[in-house]
Each structure stands twice: as structure tokens, then as C-alpha cells.
Image (cartoon, rainbow, N blue to C red; front, top):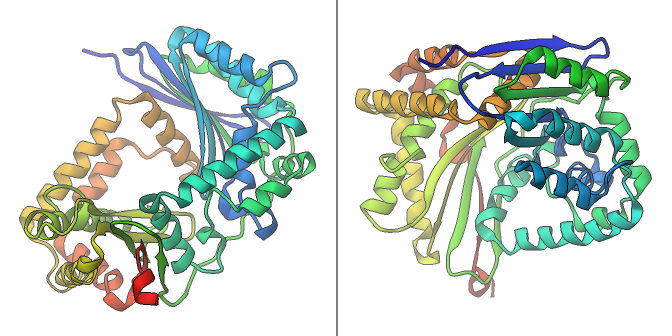
Length: 416
């Protein structure tokens, strides 16, 4: 039998939080440095700066240039990457456990010692602008950026992570350095690892690199978003219309998110979901259709999405509203509830087989809650959801007039 795993946490005097989950029966480790900063922390003059900084930290430090960072990591056989979302930025690496010390050294060097060279910046601006253009040319991705922008119009949570071209072009070394000085502070950073790692040794290595970091990050402004539903039909020369319908969801700390997860699973969470069966299987109106929920510190959103022909769009939207109304009025069946429980439990358990998922869970739990929710706790919360809980959540959220709608497709003829 595999040895038991163990989770440990240490807080350095400057506020850096260090977490590890030792999984002794694997031969790899996943290490992440997380900063509690994302696109929601940007004002209009800095839209996209968090994402651009993510790019720039790969472009050289005081001791390594961009090629050396890539070469050293490839030499270890590791996988180095990063991502930015609305509330977090993460730099992570996956390596064999024997190379964990070296991989951590590279990550720390990138985050703490990047030179933000202006010549490298000018080149990387072109890269990010091409990324923006690619995003605009991919309607099935673009529509997911547009739904929070329309539903949360005027609020920073609605801003796209990728940023604005005109802002990216104007960024300077001082802009990036000032932003990092403001937000990459020890009280807003988590360093974590999952896999075959020793906590005490990991703490010693992190302490040697981060103990001199000081200061506190700017307090994030939290507020409830109350806006009327919006609508945007963006014309593009496409064969399909890609759409998103978005309505209010729940915050990360709201216990009703478990009932909403059940709604999501039943409505659009898989091949047996109502939307997949009604829209794709029975009528053949779409190839892709589904739903998802996202939660943030102070807000959340529930989204239904799909792609269909322009001639079928109205029918598909009507079917979505019909299924939402049915769940709101009649809840779900006992069989659907049990199937959702099994699906969600399975996804939670299977995710534990990935060290990267374990590492991410550690960091997100620490940042969002200040403690680690065990897998058993989450599963217990899910199994406590009742049909009445589902009905109450659906009745509160899934009203047709509460949804914002965005669609990207060929509407030019209608406009004319």
C-alpha cells in the first residue's frame, strides 16, 4: 500500500506562505510560486500588465538570459510554464523529484531577479499583440471573454486577462517594476509544492531566497456587482454562431456553490447532461454545448455556452431557457442528483493523481480561505446537497431575464 501523504505549512516572518504536500510514492514534484494579483487589479491604464509581466519573467534575470532559463529547464527534463487569471498569477514547474532544488532555484530567480530588459520588452510586446490578434480570430474563445465584459460592464472583473493592444504598446520598464513593487509582496505570495518533496528542506530553500522580500501589497477592492443583464452580438465572418449566456453565481466562500456545481453538472456538465442530450443528441443542433461556474472573492458567474448555425440560434437559446426553467420550477430528479454526486466525486478523486492539481489546490485553498480543505471535506459538502437546495439555487439564478447574452457570428446581412 502507498504511504500516506502529508500537508505542511510554514509562514516566514515576512509573510511568505510555504505549503507542501508530500506524496512519497511518486517520483515527481510540481512547484508553484503564486502571486495574488490578476487582471481585476488593473486600472484602465494598465489593462494587460499582469499578463505581460508573466511573459517578461521568462526573458532573463541578473544571472540567466532567456535562452539559459529554457536550456537549464530542458536539461532537467522539466516543464516550465505560467498563467494569469483574474485574481492570480502562477509560475510553475513539473520535474523529477531529484531535480526539485534546481527547478525551485530557476523559478525563484525568475520571480525575484528578472531584469525586465527594454529590448526584450519591445520584442515581447509583438508576441503578446499577436496573441491578442489570435484571440480575436478565435470566436469560440473570444465569446468567453466577452460574457463577463458584458455582464459585469464597468467592473474590473469583466476585463480580459490578455489586455488591450494600445496599453501593451505603451508599457515601460518602470511600469512593470512599479506594478511588481505594488503587488508582488510577501503577504500576497504563496510558494508550494506537491509530490516527493521534503517540507523542511523546501522551507530552507525558499527562506534562503525570499526572506529579504518586504512590504505589503495594495489591498484589493472588493464589492458586489449589481448590473442589469446586457446583450452583444458581434459580427464575424464565421460558419457558426458561438454564444455564451451568463448569470450571477456565487463567491468562493458561499456554501451555495456546491448546489450550483450540481446544477452545472446536470444542465451542461457532460454527455448525459440535459443540454447535450436535448440540443446535440436529440436535435443535432450543435457540436459543442455545455455550462460552467466560476467563483471569485466577491462575485461569481454561471455560464451556458455553445456553437450552432445562425438559423438554429433562436431555437437553441429557447431550449437552454426551457431547461433552466424546468430545473428552477421542478428541481432535478433523484437519479440526476446521484449521477452528479458520482461525477463530481470522481473528478475530485481523479484530480489527486496529478501533482500539478495537488499543488494548485494547495495554493488556491490558502489564498482563498487561509486553510486547506481536504478532499473528504469537499466531497462531504457535495453529498449534502439536496434536490431542494438545487431548486432554490436554480430558482434564484436561472431566470431567463437574468441572463446576459453574447454571440459571435455572421450577423452582417441582418445588420444591413
